[in-house]
Length: 492
Image 1 (cartoon, rainbow, N blue to C red):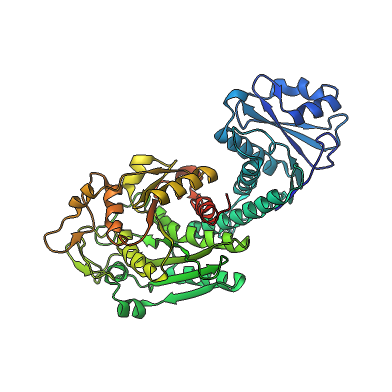
Image 2 (cartoon, rainbow, N blue to C red):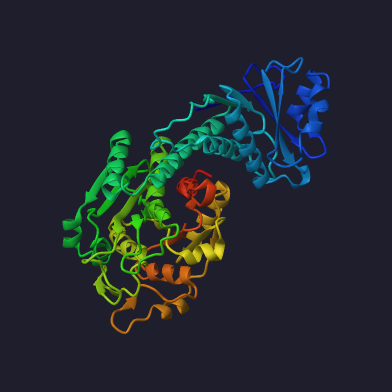
């Protein structure tokens, strides 16, 4: 699907479909008014069939005086209440209608609608991401193929051409590509998307974009002393991997941003076995790893002026005769010892060694991304990602980027008081701190390995995938990571 920026008149645009916004109370946007005038009021006469609900749609064909084959009206809700969520809902409604319609090209006149104080570049970026998200399908593994849906090949964003918007369009398209990669990796089953598969994907990206790549094997980790990481992988027949992917688009010598993504390709819980219900969703436990690969693909695809190193510890967490047991004590790469009280708190065990390893790259900022705790889902649901940080300036950077990407976060406390819950009688500390404040104690565990670095932790357990009828990966937080990296480099 291609997107282009072009100045167009809605009434004279020769396209398969012109998409226009209508506020509640039959209030026409400027583009809709022009079409109505050209059609001598025919558009306004049809508005009785359009509900005022945001995202509702009404298709009109063959309007007199209008060059487009079809006109798609999209409800924008109350004009006074029109803001970011309403704009994104309207885009989603329009994209879903275009997918069903089968038009090969369309002009999206929603993109110039005023959205609070947001600049038009924000509208453009979210228009591209919203349409691409609506058209994403994961059907690679189905043998009973449905008839191919007509593909929307070209979307015109009717705006005056300008260099900043061209850059924005390139960013949005690359971000959509990165998000799609992350979604596909997340949606693949664990018998396909193994640690070795993720390593191969990283090598593929390295070849495509001329990135630096290194994959550490089990023997390498043993030599380094990654006892925590290896304790999780012990019972799996799949060999663990530590993937290091480097993109150098910024100034030579400038310290990189380090992104560390949890890559548990399947999580049974180990000896602390999970209940059977919805265990299939534990294939999504590598979503942090997928988001790192997706973000680097996006940044490399747009030639972003940043230096980024992605570090992905990846393995399976399985039960078996060689599995770690509750009560085992392991020595981490940092030299600190950990008592494993629950083998289902495995993400922090692979991340802690990866975070220690990341220090050798002397990053300006270190961000880990992990489906770490069910407690974060209880706290924040499926709307916001949990944010923890040992540096408030870094936390503020991430919050601002998240708001810009509308891939939102909520900052949680990381006070020293919570460290007491990790106390152990037999090791330096334990890997869990009990039920109270579970997401915070998980972050507090990781904080013990990042005291010398500006570090943030994103708990995406509630935002990385959807359950139920719409089950599947969301591709979050790729948009956030891309915006953070670009803003950190000065591109606001």
